[in-house]
Length: 363
Image (tube, rainbow, N blue to C red; front, side, top):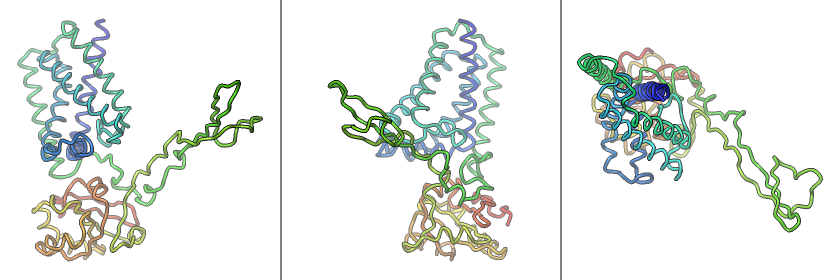
């Protein structure tokens, strides 16, 4: 039993630290996932949507710290109860989203390791069992250091986590696991994977000695049995979505996506939601646009808002570039900043910038 407890302790501790650090690399992305859970279509807790970002920061840092505390054997009761409450919360979320088919990816490991809802739920159930083993065997795991030493380690780790959170919010994630990372050919990423196409099954119904018999094939009826009662088609395997989907550049009902992907150098000024545009970033746009145009870039805007809706905001900040409509989710996935900039060369992403770093973006 002691060996099992030791294994569970190290497995849970390391997994919590890993999962927390992955999300700490991109807390804004995790906040989008919480916002989705709190929406009217999922949990109907819309009053919590405004708290999604602070909650995301707290949860990911707490996740890392709990993992460290478990490995140190520090504050056993607090640690184990906190682990139980956290895993209970996440198990409920993943079961709800899986059972009711509400959220396609729980965001447990950010964009680094996407999991479908039932995979996420299974992972949480396994963790719950391991944490319960630790709960009922607290006497079998010892503290690693003296209380004072462990306290200092926890304090230093917490400070480092807050520094990382501040840095990635004020700039961009340190590691980019998203589909729009620099070097991605957007046109290629928009194509379906030929190895993960939709697979159909054909159920052939027969009556044999008064009993119904069903034989499934991938197309033609079973050999030698042409006299079937009926046939039904069903999807056995869903086709995998392209890495980039729902990305389109449109204006006045016309699609300009391919036209811009074919251009030599384009800079996209991206504002996914005008109500969330940062004043500090908007005030830098005119200067950046001028610099980009002098460097040979065609500069256009992408937003989920219409050009008419954006007009007052753009006029206020002396921004005079044409804006095209693009899916808001794609914009906020591409660059975690509003406003933000993404540059491409013949469809290949060459640079991305948070508004804090417009002046440092290499053109």
